[in-house]
Length: 337
Ligand SMILES: Nc1ncnc2c1ncn2[C@@H]1O[C@H](COP(=O)(O)OP(=O)(O)OP(=O)(O)O)[C@@H](O)[C@H]1O
Ligand SMILES: [Mg+2]
Image (tube, rainbow, N blue to C red; front, side, top):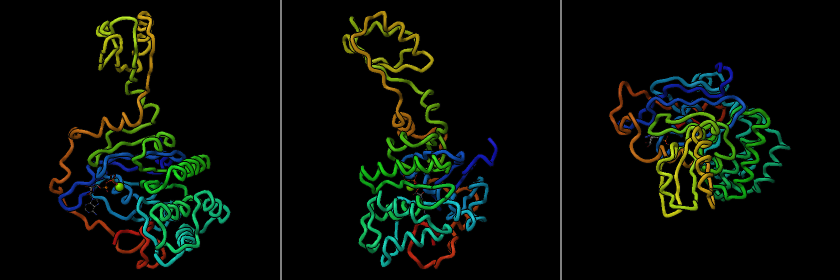
C-alpha cells in the first residue's frame, strides 16, 4: 500500500511524560475510506497517540503522517480537513450549543447547514440552550454534530459515545456508516466492543504503548479459534484424542472446546460419527481477541513508569492551530496549554 492510500501512518511512536512511558514504539495505519477501530486498556496510549496525530503533542521518536502531512508542522491546513471528537467535551459555558457548533464548524471552513439541522434532529439536541446547562451526553452531541456536519476527510473520534444513551449510540452508528459510504475515513477509539464490531473494517489493539494486534477484523478472527459446545450420545471424553480439539472440558456427554479454522472441517467429520444431540459454535468475538491482550504483562514491554530514555522534549504547544482566541475554553480543537 502506498503512503497516499493512508489517512494515518504512524510508525514507532515514542512518548514519555517524565518517568511515565506512554508510547513505546506504537504503529498505527488507517487506510483511506475505512473505519479503523483503535482499542486498548485504560492508560495504554490511545489518547496520547491521537493528541500527537492532532498536533497537540510532539512525539519523542518515530514518525506520524496525517493525510500526507506533518501533524505538527502542517497543523493549520490539516485541521481544516479533519474533525475531532473527544470523549470529554468542554464548551464555552455562556454560548449556546448552536453557537458552539457554528464556531467549531467555521474552524473547518464552514458547515453544511441542511446536514447540521438534520443531525440536530437525529441526535435530539436543542441548540438554543446554553452550554453550561448541557449534560455530558449533550456536550458530546455538540461536538459530534459539528464533526459530522463537516465535510472532513478524516474523523478522529476518541471514545465519542461514552456519554450517549443506547438510542443515540444507534444514531451515531448510522451516521458513521454514512460517513464511510461517502468515502471518508474514520479513526475510532472505543471501549464498546459491539460498536467497534458493527462499524470497523480494521482494528488496532495496543497495550502499554505498543501495537499488539492489527489488521482486518475478519482476518484477525481467522487467526483465532471457534468455541464449540456439544452434547454427544456417549461420554464426551472420547474427544480427548481427536486432532484439532483444544481446551477440552468434559462433563458426562457434554463438552466444550476450541478449534482452529484449519482443523474445523476434520473435527466436524469426527463429531458427526458420535451422533451429537446439540452443537453450538461461537466464532471468536472482538471481546475474545481483546481480552487475550488485556490481562498479564505484555511480552517484551517496558515498565510504563520506567525512566525516560534520551532527552524529553517540551511536548506541547501554547498556540492553537486554528485562528481563534486561545483563551476560549474549548478542548475540541486546541493544543494543550
Ligand atoms: N499529560 C500527561 N502527563 C503525564 N502523564 C500522562 C499525560 N497524558 C497521558 N499520560 C499517561 O500516559 C499513559 C497513556 O495515557 P492515555 O491517556 O494515552 O491512555 P488511553 O489509552 O487513552 O487510556 P483511556 O482508555 O483511559 O482513555 C498513561 O499512563 C497516562 O497516565
Ligand atoms: Mg483515552
